[in-house]
Length: 292
Image (cartoon, rainbow, N blue to C red; front, side, top):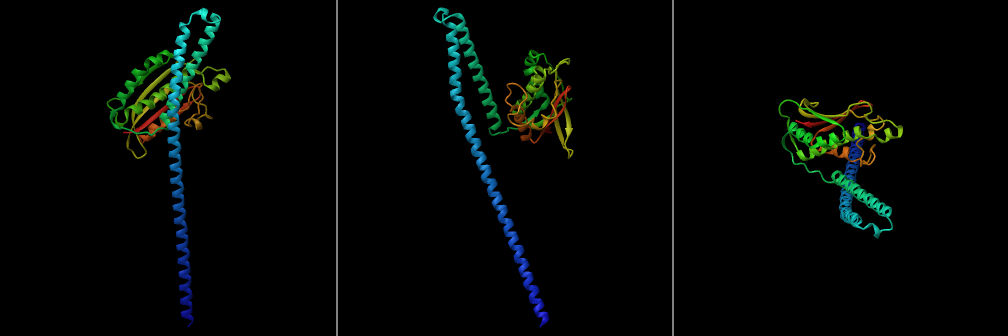
């Protein structure tokens, strides 16, 4: 009799334990379902916000274009206006300066909107086989006049042979061009920190921008294509590094703070990465690493 009672007691405990485990598994499953639903709602909400902000930016562009056109017409009208039709020549010059300032601000806003749409818009890659060396050569030819205008020597150091990979050439060009512009701006003008301290960005150093390509390998030994965008500018302050790719963060006067985030987004969309090596007072090396 005792053994039967013990058996029944053990069975009851087993059933109770199994029920407890089942309840725990059910609660865990429900929690996972709720978390999945929460993430789905959050993703849907973010998609809605993205669509709204993109639409708002497009809506702003239309009246902004109208303002820009009318500012241009107003400037042309002022230029043609006889001096005696105004109060005096100085009044005419003052009005012309104000209109010119308005046109500059319109262009600046247009640039901010364009950068925002590039960053916030959907990124669709059209990847094809292309030679990274050829891409760099075309960029160097295109950018050379702008570099020379800023007193920057642009040179290339390309790997031998072809560096062929599956890339979206226009997007990669956009990403690298952002890095080149960033480098030239760093060498051509002081950052906010430099300006506040009164130190020149590249005082006593030759201004050089080097584009260097090489073959590499990832952690698993797979082939990679590497492009170094190296400058001899002031380098990046250590306190700036954690925020370097934060949208709208910039150390340059008039910068939008979207160039580097957009560049990293394009590179990562290719399955690559963007590394940064910098030394204050010596320069910066941005390394674009793409799958080979």
